[in-house]
Length: 494
Picture 1 (cartoon, rainbow, N blue to C red):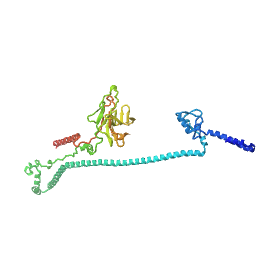
Picture 2 (picture 1 turned 90 degrees about the vertical axis):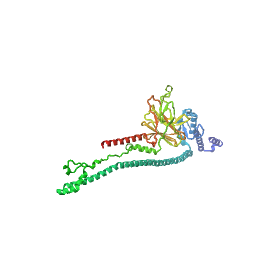
Picture 3 (picture 1 turned 135 degrees about the vertical axis):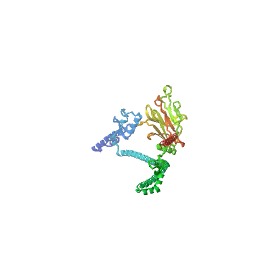
Picture 4 (picture 1 turned 180 degrees about the vertical axis):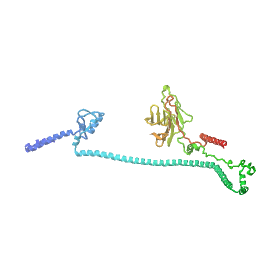
């Protein structure tokens, strides 16, 4: 612009212009130079364009934010100022508020609106995603409530079944008690009826005889004696007795007492084993109507060099073998149960008692003959309790040592949960792969030089057989002995 003004002045006679006009032209030239110098300060030294979101370094040189960030990224996170080569890092990049405020208001508003549109677009997308997640969460909540209601109905039904079994068993025992009561009371009531008849007869006879003793006139008394009294008294005498007129004395009279043939019946009600083992017998009968849980699980595969299984297949112990130079003293062999599960829900209980080192969980057999632990709960003598989930170990802090561990395997949901079997307090729960064939897994622990000789045992609650058990035979034998002793005592003491 200043070049154009100079050409204009040179092409015209300056005398044609006033001094004020010439001074104004000079002022415009100076403004033009100032504007050019200011424009240079509004250009980014990197992209040579107007600043976009200007930022300054600690050396006070200014750049576009994206330009200096790209320069810093190209330098590996620690660069030099493009102007003065002074080192700087990301934390030295600060916004230049002065230059930001110098930008045209409309352009700045457009940039702010662009940022605002980006925020609105982000929020709109996030709201859509949140609405979708809210619908899913609401459906899960409804599903959980429905599942809870279904379980509540099922629990009530199963408890009602138990209550019905208990009511039937209660009625059965009470019926037995009533029959036993009738059996014992029948001879007692017959004996009591006979005693009552004799007592009534004796009271009437006593009253008649007493009234005869009050007859004052001898003639009248003898007349009564002849007609009534003699027969009454003779009936009371035994077959060797004699009347007073023949003996002249009453000291030799012996009366026949009907009481001599009577005894108070001392029979008792006997409920047999129900008297002392009612709960056990009721529990046994309930088990006959309920599928036993856990099933009769036995150990089918184990490391025979380092573990031994009992003949029943329910218990496993660590052998004394520790390998060459004791390399396998801390080796914890694995063993698996017979059954394999890929679907459904299953429950097992394992008793470890006071064992110092053991493991319980689920495993898979792959390749055949090789066991791979999936989820295991361990107690290690040197580090305490821990859970291993597909090779990753997590430490647990248990308040007390469980005597038995309950393991709940939910193949449908892909979940394994461990419980203190006596209190049913959950110890830990972990996810497992769905569709993988899983079996109960046991580890008898490390070799502790005889300090941990206890076995790891799979608990088994089987339904009692219909034939008498050893306990029933024993109880029946006790009842027979008691009855025989009772009869013997009656013979001795009457």
